[in-house]
Length: 469
Image (tube, rainbow, N blue to C red; front, side, top):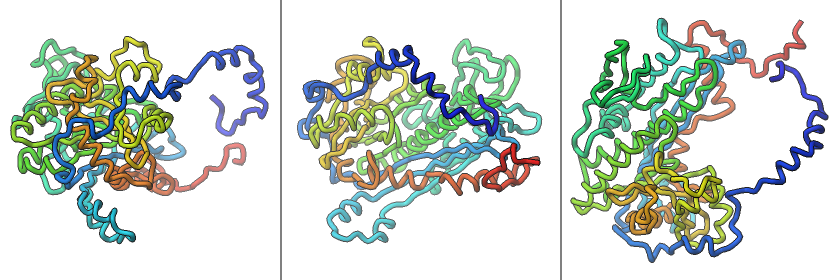
């Protein structure tokens, strides 16, 4: 690692460029997710929407509720660049789809009508990064404490009292029966491994480890403390918290309507930014989401409700890049199913790999809209099915009864403002986004003004050390 102000030689790259071993290595590689050589590889996996099973009606879907999040981590001062603070915002946006459909038929759109067609709600928090702690506590315990406070105080909507902590308890329960306690696998303090589901448990108010007698928190269920870095960036666990908050917020909306007004589920599509999946320490929660949503789907089916209409939409990533590569091989208005064999091939995984089985509670598809652009979406399977259990059933079209209706809804919500975007996702992202530039400087200054012991430093550029006298 270079010293501050140290410059590399302008010719430092020459030796690397001339190295024959480097050249040979580069020439041995191929791009796994590149464009296929034959159209047949794609066409055999595609189907027009009209040939897919249809449940429900496009005209019945009148609202969309979309959840998106944004996170950033800032250095508190230039004197202490390793002292970091994380900021998180999660927003929900409710859009009246009938208004947007009517606006599409107008030559000139009144922006006031657009603004009246949607409402939004967001909540914010700050989480401690490296070298920050509450007095008398370690950094990781401070993280756990602050995260637990965030979950218990953040309401998923301003009109309710239900918090993300309530959503986490609901996730571990059944339809209409919220869990009162959740088992932990390992004590975050002493590392005790639970012998059974009663060894380590937490409730809404926490718990106590029987071995070390240390405080346990409901937030420990998310296991983000396992990735907390005491001396470096904590952007990764911040991202885990953002993902968990987004998914729990969507779940809260689903359960709220199921409890208070089940018929609303028939008329609402729920969107999340990103795939219906959980990664890293959050991955074990995938099973809970799968079982809970399957239970809700069965409950809705018994009441003749086409619900829940839940879809994840990806804006970036490997599959979005691949969709761009092959979009002209997919006819407009057609859906492409991604089999395990195809996914393993384009991602460079072994042919025997069981993709997504531990992370996904929905299955990915590529839909080329009637306007011609591709969308990478994740859709729930039918009740009782696991989307990536490597069986032929879950790779067939019949396993995803809401797929056609969801694609038809997305067709009516496309926007040319951004690539791979639909209007509700764009609005939710606008409500959640934390700005760079001046906005980031303001967040840095906020940390300086409120954390004891930090010097206020608003200088845009620090003078290089070799100019100092």
